[in-house]
Length: 426
Image (cartoon, rainbow, N blue to C red; front, side, top):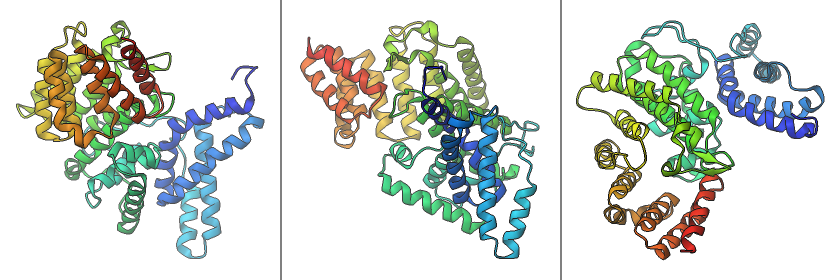
């Protein structure tokens, strides 16, 4: 905070940043200590609200993460004390008083590296608890994104392409199921890890995706989410080194994240074609490619969806230039991915890749998707770009206008608006 900046504005920025960085840690710690998911979220929220009230006068504490965790814990103690009408509640309160907050000031690690090790990270425990097989798959993912990442119900609904009301009910039902079933807050034993792995990887993938392509707001990338997803993916890969899809997901994240610094300029999204490749982190690309090579050998011929997506990312990250990108190979990889994930978004990405080699062919491949994706800006943005490459400026402008209307406020909309201005004056 500069001397000229109002204290309240500086504190608001600090608390907003801490919310992105510390929410999952605070909530996961309180869930472990109280076993009450709603109480954990409510007390965490109260702690952040108290920070906004007190820090303008008192100053930001030296260890703000620890302050938030301790404040939330004290609020939970107060709430339990008021509700302590029986012996069980009194025992719960005593246990909470006795808990030592060893991990409140920084990220935790793991002891050991393989199945059966004791994982000392509340956020990893939280993911595995949320991903219990008793919960429906989408409920597992949604619940973890809400409690671990602090995503709003609207943000999670957007990731699943459902209404906010539908997602709110889904999260409420998932919390009730966890409570009623008494699901343990722990990383499961080795024999159960593989069963829960697909849901855990799904959580991490959506967490990274929400951070890497933030749909709204001024940030095109939410670093707190991408960094947390990569950190947890490393823990999962270390816990299950023999699972190639866990390594594939980590490689995918590393390869995408290595290009993140070049994705935005002046608050506008920079498309791959215009990115300054000298800003890509080559050491991270090398790490991702080496890990991908390892898990492709490890998994044999039948690569899974995360390894295929990592292979696509590697094609982009290792191409000397946009013009030298192996688009035909990428389109074929999207075809392989479609067999695992038969979604319209995958089909659209395949059409885009094919269109980079042959715009007319790519445009034709988008036609069957029109009815189902007409309400999503990504379809109109893709069609507009292919039409622009074909020199059909008037038609491109029509789709850019529709894309701008549908895109959320933020860097991507600003990029689409610029493109619209370019083709409208051709």
